[in-house]
Length: 451
Image 1 (spheres, rainbow, N blue to C red):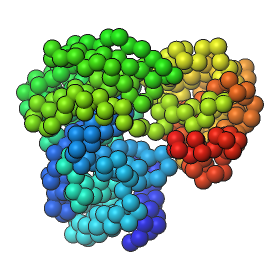
Image 2: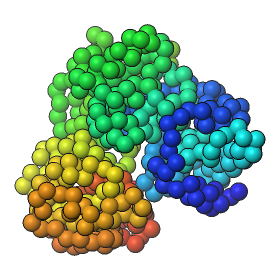
Image 3: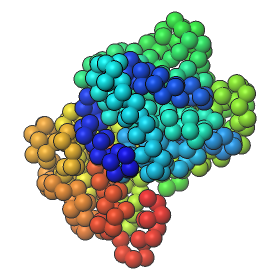
């Protein structure tokens, strides 16, 4: 099938969480039929509630700077499904996606016909198999895998990684992972493999206990970044941070990342620690390469500035922990500036807890609705709240909502579009298509370059 046909077949599987199942049998059966492409290169796996995407992008960037041909598999995508599968920083091409997807689809059809699969795989299982196959074909020398959800039974968790990373753990996807931090930590800790070094940024006592116990059971060396390294001399400029890091008796001075937000310091330390673990295993990764890799890392849709006057910022912030991080960033960076919030959410998210962090930031709130069956209607969001905001507008179309927010803002104001990566994706898609304009002609080229 061609690219369009591949996308159509994928779309028929439903949204990201439809058909999701926690069982590695299907992905293992598919990969066996494809002659185990995931075994042809070393891997790192990154799990966590927040920060796993940024950490994956940073680690992949460091590996690329070392000269290795590096694969990166992430989720979800913002604009095109191709974003999820990258080699050397470049998205998989339409033709290569169609080729690998067709091969996976054909293998699945044969397995279904032979009753080797009990049911059709999920959206995520198909894409994970496509990624593993494409990385083998490329071929990559190393692959960084971001867990989709959980870890223990996530489709990415079928390799023997050189290093596993677990970022922060908080409440999210409780209907799938459990209703307590301890239960969720147990699922995330499922990426730990016997003897495989584990890097953890978790500080929640319950999560720490679960991860320590699992690492001990499997004889996996555990590095807890908050006690292993020392961050000092933190400075910031326009939302970006620079810091010194001391680790293993060495100093890594003036580390910085292009990704804004103080919380990216913790993610940077996780990526640096993982890179140093790999260096001890023989990969040629110097401290200079680590510093360059951090500076070169890109991760869209997280505190992403797409316009300067007014400042328009896009961020997924789809769970309470992420919303608190955005609130902390706003307090540091935007104090005294008038802020309009364009907010949307999936109805299965903790809307009340998220809005308790985000809504107090804004003088005006515009509630909107991405084109997703899981998305909450603006009136549903209002019904979820305790106290209703004073200045709230309902505008179902996300593009119209953002246009209104920008139109009614002054050049020094801030417009924050947050609450769902689907909202971010629709806005970025409109910007790329030219159906949403946030600036006059003099700024359009700069905005296009950022996207």
